[in-house]
Length: 332
Image (cartoon, one colour):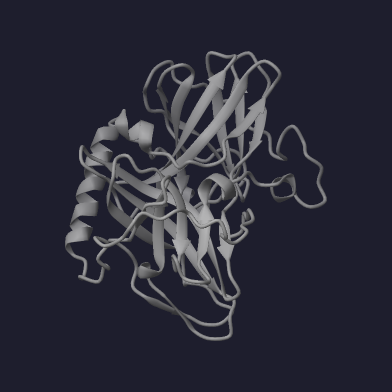
């Protein structure tokens, strides 16, 4: 339960209603499957439901691929965690929520926050793993850096700082190899940063690039993690419709905590999903996956070079008020 309660990012809540029931999406984060060779991951969404006892959920990505819920975890007072099995690194654009006895509610998904200065753009793709034990948290995030300048740019984990709700800075202890990014190019792929030894009381609130430098970039999750616009979801020449272009098949949630087959549905099914076993499921034992993730992270940490900067001298600092303006984007 501690994992479910803390394993979310503080983003702008998304909300929708059919006039009777109200749905609030508080946050979402991703977890890798145990097998590093698979092409799927688990997307966890923190949901609040009022005015209805239950609802069905379907997630639509940027390519109109539809994902039904694979697992429901009822919490308390209408709160629940729902789990989707999605293709790796998919960008989502819309969620369909149908309350029991109600009408479908379509809610625009969160956009990709980004921050910039005169020379570069940093895009934040969210949390890809979140591990908690009795003493600390370990948080893995995914980013991409684009060089808008005229000179080569060296990008490394040391450029990044994770700030909690009080402005306390955490330096990455896991990460990618430094990369030279040429002018008008971006990092070869999205890269991951791991932060270990994070206090249990800390909640990720912002990501900084070149923290405390004159041209620092800060992405504030509470301010910049906002929903996609209707134009991004429905197209520049389309008017907002109560339903997406492709009809969504009905999905009945399980009566209790259990696993159901989670695979893309309707037209436009992911090519990689077709190659994988169509009955890939989210495991019923979340604890087993947490344990496996902890072991994997610990093994990776032990193999690191001693390149991580010493953070013992870091002092508490407030999130800068002069952070760069950020805009939502559904682009990769």
